[in-house]
Image (cartoon, rainbow, N blue to C red; front, side, top):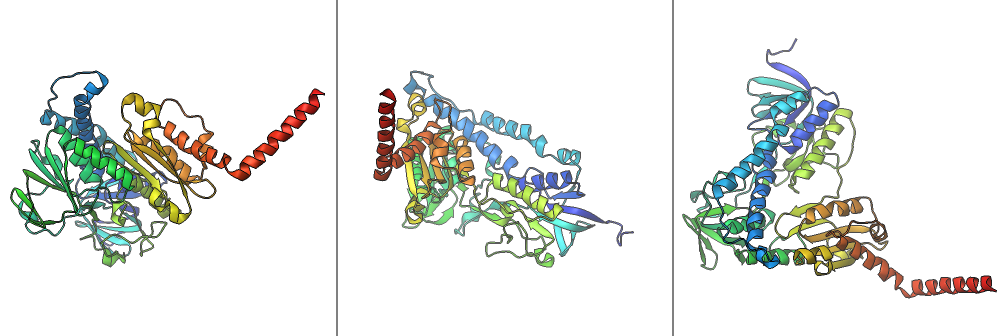
Length: 478
């Protein structure tokens, strides 16, 4: 009998109902473990409610508006483009509502996962409390995610600043929107609101956008944002905020109707009682894990944004599966270090592995193809982009950057190439459908193959082979 009437023992306690927690719970239950998932608000996490789904729905509406305005370049005139922001919001909500059932408590229950609403507080290395309920677990999975970070700017807490979490409550299109942060979130949302009709200014302390991405890719995004009417204030440090005005160091003042803060995210670990559980955190408050997603407590794993960057839904899902499998079966599967990333601006920026800037110091070669030479880009009038392959000394693909329409779809093949250590010859020898933006991959790979064929030693060997074949042909003719 339990020592307490509300005490129970489970195989797996999953803390958090975002992507990592959902995948982890489904995986653990599928493996036969008695699984309980605890979520304090609503299952689905950032991706469903405030991240991927609403943001990409908004970007779709913004892209439609931009395409309509620029249709004249293809000989199609559509007249004045009007944006009904209320209907745009309806589209966003409809997308969330369509996807929500897949992440719902009902879906989890059907998969054999018991769902509890509340906040988990660990009381020991193998015990936790959810309200008055006490839970003893054989293993636990931490998946509490991350939240928007707020910089220490004087007055920021007095101006009703928006974040990627609260932006979706805005009912009217802001006339003047200032975006603090030139990373992926700031660029995506800044461009989207400019295309929908806001007067947008993006502010960043760095001297360029997308600091983690290839500099040439970032330059193309900056040019695209400017074409869409976005004002860029780069190398600019925010000093203080007051209602309706963001003041920059040096005296410049940016008036706004709404201020969006998009300077990054931080793991949500406060209030969980992790010290009692023996779970270590790093200096940024992220749960410290090893390559098999074990924490300092061997009973507890962690996955997703709570372990720190990169803050991607796709890594959260994969890591949730790995952590749950390891926990239930006692395995030590390691996370895959090859992680693709995409910034969903127009043009998209998709990257994986070693970047072009790192190539020389690693002894690698970069093969780059401008999309101005790619037939699909030419016929669509979308030639501002490029594809770069980073190849090691054995001509294996170790990294790639693609800038252009649907670059994220192109990245799948290149991520597999990096992971499976495929060569440029493997890519060049694979039949690709024509005409697609993937032609750039083939052209870049062929460029490497042809460069190898042009090497003096290879040319000498080829001449020797051809001389031998000619001699053999002459003998056969006698």
